[in-house]
Image 1 (spheres, rainbow, N blue to C red):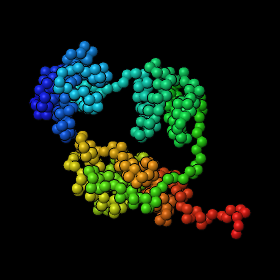
Image 2 (image 1 turned 90 degrees about the vertical axis):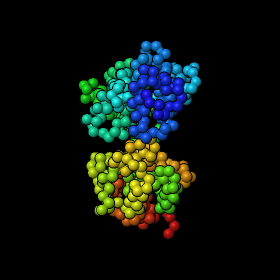
Image 3 (image 1 turned 135 degrees about the vertical axis):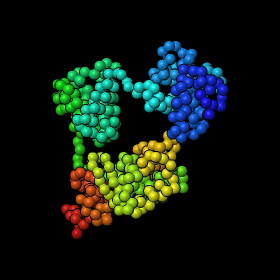
Image 4 (image 1 turned 180 degrees about the horizontal axis):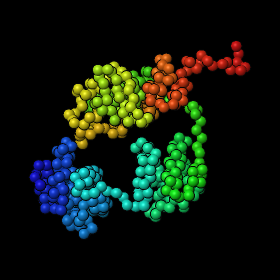
Length: 415
C-alpha cells in the first residue's frame, strides 16, 4: 500500500503485511473519492491497521473479514488492548472507521451485504415486503412500523421462531399500555396501526389471527379537539434572524428554513428537492414523489427563490449530485438527510429561547398565515397537498378574528 496518508511505520506495516492489505488500499481510494480530510483518512486507516494486526494474531474465527469479526474486535479486543505503540484505542474512532470500512467492502462486492439471520429479522424482512408490494407504504412509515413490530416480536419470542398463532390479545394490550405507558394518545394510535398491519400480514399468509385485529385497543381520536401550535409573523421573522447566514452552511440553513416556512414543505420534500425541480423562468417548483404519491407544482415565492439562488451560487460545493441541498462535509457528493433539516430548525428554536422543537410547527404556521391573509381553505389544502379538505379544517380554529365575529353571546352574560 502506498504511504500517502499514514506516517507511522507500525500501522503501515500492519496494513501492508496483514490480511487486509488489498482491502485497505481500496478503502483509501474509497475515502479519497468521498473527499475525507487527510487527518480523518489517517485516523481511519490506522484503525483498520489495528484490526489487521488483531486478525493476524487472533484465532481462526476472526480470519474472515465481516461484521462478526469487527463486532468481536470492538467488544472483546479493544477494551483490553495491549498492542504496541503507536496504536489508537479510541472506541468511537474505531467504530466509525470500521463501519465505513465494512460499507466500502460491501459496495466493492468484496463481501455480501450483512443480513441478520435470526428469526425476528427474517420475519421483519417478509413484513417489509408486504408493506412495500401490497400496501404501498412510504419508506418512513415502513421503518417506523418495522421498529415497533420488531420490538413486539422480540418481547414475545426472543430468539425463538415467530409463531403468530401463539400471540394472545393480552400480549397486544400489554405491549401498548404497559410497555409504552408513558406515550401520548397519538403515539399509541401509531402503535395500534402497526400491530393491525402486522396482523393483516399474517392473515394473508393463512394464519388464523383475524380475531387479534379486534383485540388491538382503539385509542380515541377526537377530530379538531386540539389547536395546532403556530408561530406569529413576528415569531417567524425572529426565527429567520436567528439563522446566521455568515456561518458555515448558513446559506443552506436559511434556504431550507425558507422552503419550510414559505411553502409549507415537509422535511422529506426539502431533502428530495433536485435542481431540475425548480423552474426559474416560470417561477415554479415541482414536488415529485411526495407523501401524496403525486407530482405537485407550486409557485416559488421571491424570497425563497433568492435564498436558494444565493446558496447555489456562493456556498454549495462542487458536486455531480443533482440534489439542491447536499452535504458540506465528507462524504461529499451526497444529499443531506432529514436530520440535517431538523437540526437547523431546532437550533434556531433554541436560539430564540423556545422550548418546543417540532419542525411541523412551521407547516402549521404557513397554513395559519395563509388563512389570516384571506386565502380560501381549498387553496390552503392545495398548497399543503392535503388530499381531503377536512385535513385543513383544523386551521380555522386558530383564526380568532373570524371566530369572534360569528361567536354567539354566552347565555346569562350582561348585555
